[in-house]
Image 1 (cartoon, rainbow, N blue to C red):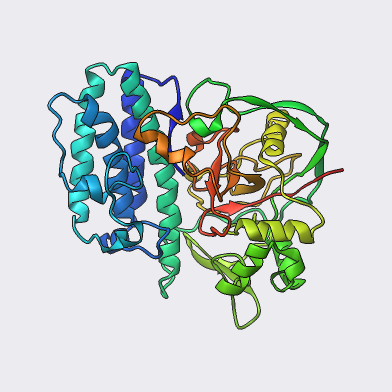
Image 2 (cartoon, rainbow, N blue to C red):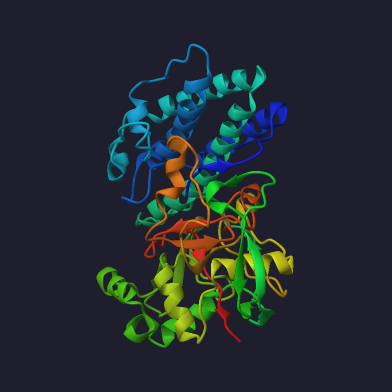
Length: 422
């Protein structure tokens, strides 16, 4: 996930307050972690929490303070390389798979770095930021919210690799016992407008707003549940090559997939799942999560359906007024069973894989400068997800938000719902 924005920014004291709130939230997410937790990296695609704390600070220092603070001096010149993710226009980067080797700087120095940049940003905003500076700050805040979810994703993967199966947080109260039956909601053919309308913040990949023609389609009333997916598994879904795209079948064989990520089958034959509140039995009523695009696509084929296009998904949300589900602020950090309704959980609980490749909209132009690298250059070999998850900040998501991941990614909080052509 990443930035590159179009936004009329909020300004002045409101933005300063928002800045402090979001920055404090990132540090609060790391409070349950030990210094050792914050330094470890469990796979090449993940990053240590300490790196996330530093990189989000690097963003503000590099793109806001460096060009706009009079007499700017970096906190530590070495951080320009250590905490640059992949902005080639800024300079060299420390290799992503080796971020877990950065035992120095210590966590205390990273937190001091954050405090230093926060003081400087506060002074800059207090002096009356220009519209350009306010837009960059708003971009940085949305970027930081993305990394809040990445912290939870990466910490979950890290703790799951520990044989002690430690919990990140206390378990929530018991969820509802059952999910409603799946029904189909119909939408007629016609021309729809897709993309951000220009009011408020959006990333550049959400526009330009444009028209598409859609054939009639139906969308499932809720995401696919763990119980639904257990039926797919019981029908040898992971062992039937006719259900899988060729690359998906190769991933099944190469990586030994037999169930969603974090699921484990006990000696008694029952499945458990690792969550941020520890390992517990799989709840059939909850939306299935941590599945790849390939698994979602194979299940849809098994079910005699398909994945919706991102245009169908956005249209359905716009025309249904569906109520939001579970977000980061709810503290559950795990998808909840769907409530009854025509279209439930389209926002929150699990990101939903779509059948759309991550490509530019007609007329797309990346933002000028290095910040333009984050979205446009990744518009290849990835698929679009929509809707946010239980780890997404509630005020970060919107109906036009386009998330994207490689087709074999399983550590995001990603599930899916079905579509079909009547």
